[in-house]
Length: 270
Image (tube, rainbow, N blue to C red):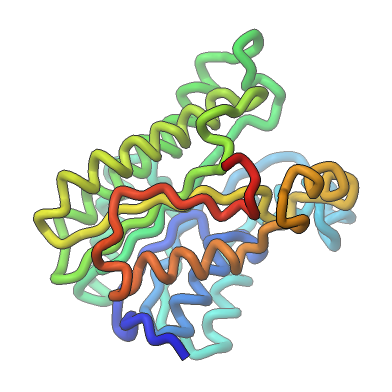
């Protein structure tokens, strides 16, 4: 059995209210290793049919993101995890400071940051011909500004251990049809490399995980049939696949890995 050296470490995980999401899977993975977990989430309200949330598809996904983190918290409590849950908006500088204040008040330190929270446009306005200023501003506010603010505050309160993991997407470099979302993630990948160089002097690593099509509740049966042929390994990525990679990057064993973008995509978009 691998021991990642995370017992007693404190991890902040953003975007943690979807029970089928990467944030939830990572929180559970950290908790099983004995880490203390801070769940950060923001409710995102988009129209969905509650009658269809019992199965994978956009209604389940939108419904999960519109709710609180109760289900995720309950799963953590069931395995005896030490955790706190914070509803907040990482695109707001004052809110970010409050996240760290609450974390330090509860645990006295912070060791790991997972920038998992992200937003995109669901109206079809994310192409070069249809893009609007509000889509650009809203997307970059969370995916880029929010991640930068979370990292900056992490550095202010750094301990003797530091691991930062950002979440991108496998198609960040070429994402026709979702140009602003893709551009925001490509920016996050560039930031990962630059910040890694700046903070290496503190012994802090900064890496990025770029998932391929991951079943976080949004992929229905029809889309699954369409996307699987694009994945060389022939199956959807699961949140646990991403969580295990994050767990390793946050571990003692990964102490000399920094500035890397690691695709967990089953071979898609490599």
